[in-house]
Every structure is written in C-alpha cells, then in structure tokens.
Length: 193
Image (cartoon, rainbow, N blue to C red; front, side, top):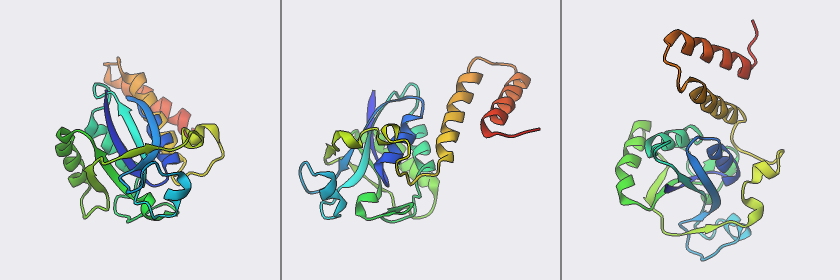
C-alpha cells in the first residue's frame, strides 16, 4: 500500500469522491502543511493556521497506479483556481498534492504538466498532517444531505466507471463489450429509447 495526501477544496466532498474509486483502501480527512500543531477545524477555518483541508489517501498501486489516481483527482478539482473550489474560498481550500515518497514526484509532475497552463495546485512534500475529529471523517456518508462543493454527477460517473470496469473485466468479445457498455450506461444515466 502507498499513501498520498490530496487537497481539493472542502475535504468532505473530496473524500466521498475518492472513496468511490477502485483501489482506494482508506481515507482520512485532516489538515496538512500548516504552521500550528494539532489544529481544530475551527482554528483552520479562520485561515490563520496555514493548513489546507486534505484527504490522506491509502491506495493499492496494483489496482490504481498513482498516475491514474491523480488523473481522477484532477477530474474533481479546478486546478486553475487559487484558494477556491466551488463556493468555498480561503487558503484552507487550496488545491495541493503532498507526497511522502520522493519517487512519486516525477509521476506527479507528469500528470500536472498534462493539465496545461499555469496550475494553482501546490505540489510539495508533506510537512505535517493532523487528522480532523471524528465528526468530519466520512462526513457525507453519515450526513446524506450534507454540503458538498462537487457536482453530484461526479459521484454517478465514478460509480459507473467502477461498474463498467467490473462488468467488462473478463469480456474479450468486442461486440459484447460494446453492448454491455451501452446497456449499463442507458440503465444508469436514465436514457430511454
């Protein structure tokens, strides 16, 4: 197992999104790379601690390589927005990729370069991470109507991609693959006709 820390706005939505990706073993929300030890949510919310709301992601690289995981991460953020994701604004909502293994840096740089343009995504070693208290862990699973800056469709597409992968995993016939894909998309997306 490997670990990477990802900041992408409010950690409630980002954690919920990441948990839906195959190969993610566990997540923990918290605060990274700030200047105050063991901050509370309320302290970080003041934007005076320097921390970013972050998700610690433990993943299985045999199931999801870092490159693929980061490509999925970029689907959930606006990488050009400075200190803002959705309606959430402040330095605590900045985007970032914080790594513990220096060998991850070339992959991170490759994925960032592929995004084009000057990115607002902070890429640097993980300096510190403090877990948020339990009420914030897996928040959207515990609070189905809870606030989320991510569009709800992103969760549907993540589930669809996972189910397509599982459905087609052992299918070698191209026509059967196309038919199964079409049927699943029609069913999940509510298309008629």
